Image 1 (spheres, one colour):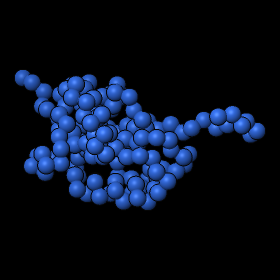
Image 2 (cartoon, helix red, strand yellow; image 1 turned 90 degrees about the vertical axis):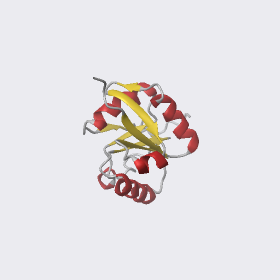
Image 3 (cartoon, rainbow, N blue to C red; image 1 turned 180 degrees about the vertical axis):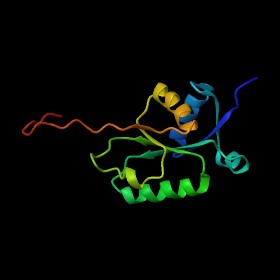
Length: 140
């Protein structure tokens, strides 16, 4: 008896979607087989997980609105936010986002490890704040 194929919708800019689809295209995570699907397929057969790829932005209100819209559209599928770029310390309104997880600039193994956790109802948060510089250090 084979494992059930998990449908994962990737939502975001085309280049980012292609990168994540390539990771998913390797076919298997630690929890079993996954298949990247597009929005047309997702409207026919609800996704098991939605991955939203977004740039880290200063307008956290827009981030919250988009997360709420995605959650409302694809609920009960968990929403994983994949943030590209740096995040300002304290700048992410985690309590306002209807998400099951956030990964900041994840590598392929981190993403593959997160999927089965999220698909089984768990949560994953891997966000890195930039290191604080000591006062007076002017190095870049």
